Amino acid sequence: MNRVNPKKLLNTKWTAVMPINKEKHFIITKVEFDEEGEVLGCVIEAIMSKREQAIQWQNLQDSNVWLQGWK
Image (tube, rainbow, N blue to C red; front, side):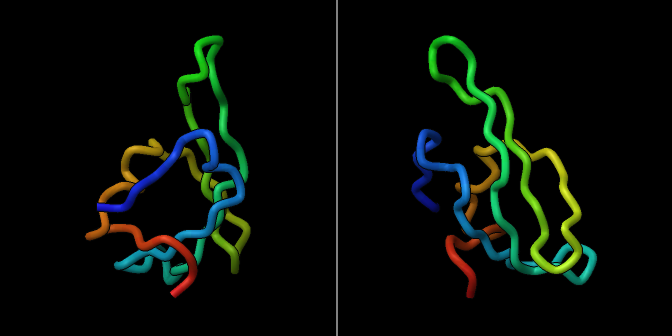
């Protein structure tokens, strides 16, 4: 299990354990918060193609799917 602090999520780097569309390295480019400071959503961007997709930040905690940093 990856430890993820939602307040420090912006610009963090991630590696997909199973490459998605031949893309392995990603970065969090946008994080949206509500009035209480809870994360409403975030956007992850593939480094090679610049393709963006919305992701639930809780999914990043699964170390079977995501590794912190670029490996």
